[in-house]
Length: 268
Image (tube, rainbow, N blue to C red):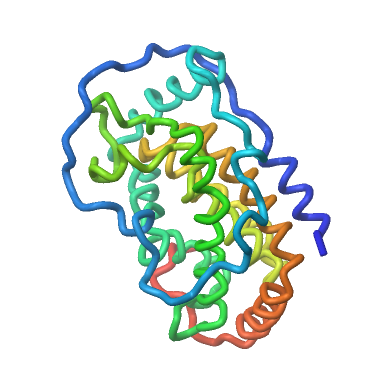
């Protein structure tokens, strides 16, 4: 069953940002400065699969192409990249660095702190399993659009500050749509179904995890918005899968009875 809040989320995710002019940087591609990002290069080792069968959703058809070169929206994307470089070293920059690691950094911690309960394979195994399988569905749904449109990431071709290592894989993993944005948004939506009393904060956290990719310089704003849009469609489609519905119910019951408090949360 597709729930009304998910339809509203789908509409909201389609809203575009503001446009501002900015020249396109043309400096040489920077050399890799560190290892591949483990959050995007691979999830934790697993034999799990996502819930959706192949071609359950055609992400490239749903999204269409990214903004055309030289268009108002594409210039706005590049202006946003230039503007967010000014955040280097700021608290928001540091938060973006933490959010970059979906599994072991700030992204999962955000949700744990909102819920007041630790989300982990030991404390909440059913919930962790659900979230991991969702991330695998993100790959199934999002990669066809990445492969078809193959948009170059904003950090390629310049040496502006970014909050992640300039690793070689960033040249071959396309920018559109953002997988981090898809994952953060999907987690926020599904956790909001599991803990509706925390829905606003959970969905907001999912949005901010996506925006952290803009702050980091790993994605353009339109990549992040496309990720939210496609993720909303994915979560809606997941409700037609009996196995997802069954595991969602198990995870919701587990989360309701969980007692391990979240650790190292910021003061309220």
